[in-house]
Image (tube, rainbow, N blue to C red; front, side, top):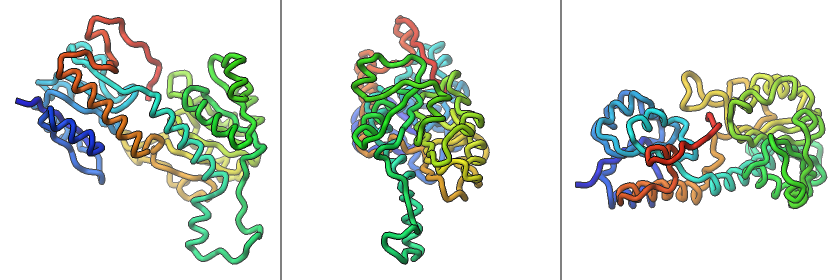
Length: 342
């Protein structure tokens, strides 16, 4: 008899079909809403494997309901929405996925969002559709070029490095800040100069926020920092909403103290209580580009993420240690250390 596996939202078909070869698969097949709590608790009751994604909480109550649970396989790097300590206490492995491919895609998206904001592409699309285009070579619709501008990158990990490489190809000057500066060789290869956070905000024409959300980075970008930005500066956030004081950014944008912003992440998203996404005030501002937390939403990347999750499940079913175990102590190994909180 095949083990039962539950998935709380649709996944790429290539991965779903592969799972069906080994498991009795049930999918909450809705794209128009999140699964309700009662539906989730009912769905997991007789499942041996839970596929985790979409920041659908698998907390102690869900683990209690899944009385036959043997594995939680997350299509996520850190699976912060899974109660990993509780799973570990029960001897249940929790798997994730590597960050490398995901980070490369997010770097590409971050740079795309930067370009779209600098060149006012969504606004230009609305401008044209509203039949406001009356002149060529006029002052009616001006963007901001990248060549010769200074880009400050907050967090020079895999994503930040990918953004830097793309910026360098566009002729931008690159500043960066991170907890531990790069080596001189690394800085030279990227053409990047280290700055303190405050100096980076003062000097940059564009600021890209790319750090992981940790206790150290939560609330990192304050109203005081935003107040030091140049009047023509643009801020991009593809990190996590809590890294940034969103209300302070709204104030700066509304008052015209900075030129614009491109945001893919927000203080309140679909997994948080109450209203989700950008505030009503942000939605009304013309100088901000808003996207729905889609930094990894390339078709190819999502398929790779799903297939890696499937590979971890297959290895578990074959009696082999999965590749990406987030609680290796269930296998008698040293616990995994991580500072990521979102």
